[in-house]
Amino acid sequence: MSLLNEIAQCRLCTEQFEHDPSPVVQGNARAKILIAGQAPSMSVHKTGKPFNDASGKKLRAWLGVSELQFYDPSVFAIVPMAFCYPGKGKSGDKAPPKICAITWRKRLLAEFHNIEFSIVIGQYAQAYHLEGFTNVTDTVREWASYMPEQMPIPHPSPRNLYWLKQNPWFEINAIPALKSRVSEILMN
Image (cartoon, rainbow, N blue to C red; front, side):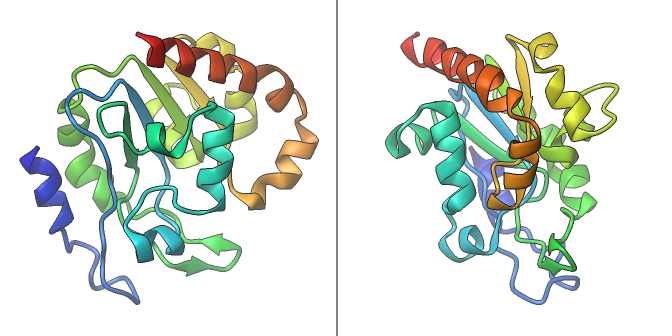
């Protein structure tokens, strides 16, 4: 996929970062599951491997998949709203720069012809992908209405432990459905 090579060379945000841009994205035309996330963490920025951090460990547990399965680009297309680490903000990482999605997202998503299921993580991805998005809690609470094509989930970041404690229904009801849908696709 030559578009991925183009993205790897992207330097649109060079001026606004305190570090060199290092786009991180995964997938190929055969990918069956889209993970629409927010932006890479500093750990991901350093390694160039998507979700290579505590969030990734939690996400793989929620999906019920091994690292080998997760990093297979013919299974999972991992496409954040911004491909580079946006830098540190006041209470966590900065928001994904909009220029990334404006420049690349539509073209890249068009390359994935076999997507059967999209996992839409966090407010930025949900606002982009889900019509009528209001906020993460309300959107995730309605997860079943998006199935079997999509599923909104909160970010699996350790920063969201409070949200998970406040919303136990997510891990009780939604996670088993998420695992089941991913397993169904992997078996086909």
